[in-house]
Length: 419
Image (cartoon, rainbow, N blue to C red):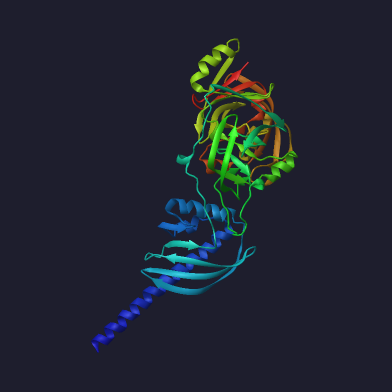
C-alpha cells in the first residue's frame, strides 16, 4: 500500500511539474505572438535560452536575427492554436497553427528547455545568409593615383562599373558600407519562397529584402572583386525617382584603402594611395590652401564636429546624402538658425518615404571655415545610430563636398578642404 501511495505521489508530482512547465511555455508562445504584432522583442528576449536558435543561427546571432525578423516582417497574428504537445529528452515541444494577416496559416514549432526558456523557434521557412568579411578578396591596381570620371544624377555621383564584363551605371555612395547590387537585375531561382531579412539601415528605417548572391566579377576603375558574395537589394524605386537605370551602389569597402579626392567642378573622383599622398600634395596641391579637419571613423562613417550657433554637433560624412540631414529632435533647438522652413518628402534605400521638415541652415562652421545656406532635412536618426552603433546628430554630403575640392583620408582620419 505504501508503495502504491509512493507511486501515485510520484505521478502526481510529475503531472504537476509538467502542468506548470506547460503553462509557462504557453505564456511564452503568447508573448511571441504579441512581439510579432508590436514588432518588439524586448519582453520575449527575457525568456530566451542562452543557446537560443532560429533559422540555423544560435546565441547572440540568433537574437539579432529574431529582432530583425520581427521588425521587418510586417505581419499581424490574427489567431493561433495549439495542435501538438511533445516531451523529448528534457525538452518540451509545442506545435502551433498561426494565422497571419498576409501569409495565411503557418505551422510553428516552439522548443523549451528544462528552465522553461525558449530554446528554438521555427515560425515558417526562413533562410538567413551571412557574409564573412575575412573571406573578402579585393584586387587593387598598382597605380598610386586613379582618376575616375563621374556624372551627376540629381545631387548623386554616378560612375561606370564593369559587372560581369558589361558596362553598367552605379551610384558612388561612401555611406554604404558594402557594394550593393540592384536585385532587379539579378537572376534568381524563384521556386523556393523564403523570407529575407537584413540588419542594414536606411534613412527611414531598416532595409528589408537585403540578400546575398555570388557574383562572377565587379570591376571599378581597376579595383576588382571576383567570385564574391555581394549584397543585393531592390532599389528600383531609386531608379524611378532618378529616371535612370541604376545597377547598384559602390560603397566604402571597395575604396577604404584610398584617400578620396572629390572634385565636383571637374566631375572626377581621384583615389590616392595614402603612402603616396605626400608626393601628390607636393606635385598637385603645392599652391593650394589646405584646411585639415580631423575626424573619428565610427563604423564606416567619418565623423566631424560642426558648430551651428554656439553649439557643437557630430556630423557623419556621406557623399550619398543629396542634402544635409539632421536628427528630428534637433529641429526645435536649431530653428532660429534656419530659414525657409517647409515640408518635404524624404526617400531612401529602405523604400520608405515620409514627410519631413526642411530648411536652409544659415551658417555652419567646420574647423575655421564657414558654410552658408545649406539645404537640410530633419528626420529621426535613431535607427541609423542604433544599427551602426553611431552617435550622430546629422549627415553632410553634397551640400558641403560640392562647394570645393575635398579629400577624405580614412588612413589618416582627416578631411582636407582645398581652396
